[in-house]
Length: 312
Image (cartoon, rainbow, N blue to C red; front, side, top):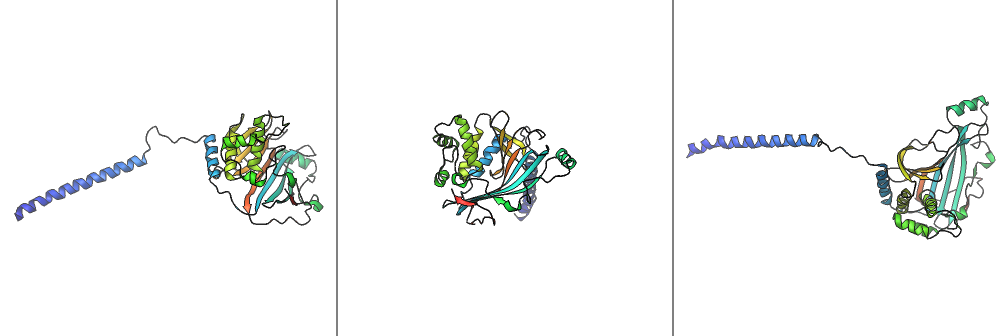
């Protein structure tokens, strides 16, 4: 019996070796399958419209935010013909703060003015490099001043100024938001319903403390307007390439919302219009968002800034 038992052990070892070899083959084949992509299944690139919808979804998922004050700090960029006939880029800093108690604060500072582009720079030098204004130092007695009227700041369209609570209660779905906005069309408004939706929708996105859900709904609502386009090849004045919602104002003017695809937050709102000498597609006017959101930090207007605090 002992001898017969010994005779079976080599057979058991043989089967174990075969099984281990088979498992090794399976693992190798599995690794090859994972490393080699299936034939005919290349990744499908997201379209600009899909990128916008995804960005809107990310924005809608953000919390509303809390705090006593809503801060909006922006860098304003304007490109226009200077007094000498060449293109000039003017930049300034704008601050708006709205308190939950109705207190408002706002001030603007002109920062710089310089020739825009190589051709303009050469023309500026030929003209003797004159001082370009408005900019810091042009008027030391009026460095900071309000650039807006606070008392009517929450006006979304002619004849309609919701309260802060009404603004924060606007719908978070595109069709519902459009329906609500159209309930407030003013008597005597002589443009189309789509024009009203565009005007109020843009204000909701870029100018007032609407909730993330309402702003996301506004993106989708605006994207459904006639003539709206979604682009993925636009850069803002800061050089950032985002997903861009472009709206037609008239035959010559376009408004572009350059949006961070990673968060859905607005990077820049800009206007593209034909200005002689300005490269095609370049923004004539742009507002770059530096800060937007709620905070408990109470604003302190700059020293000497007159009428920089009021009620809204």
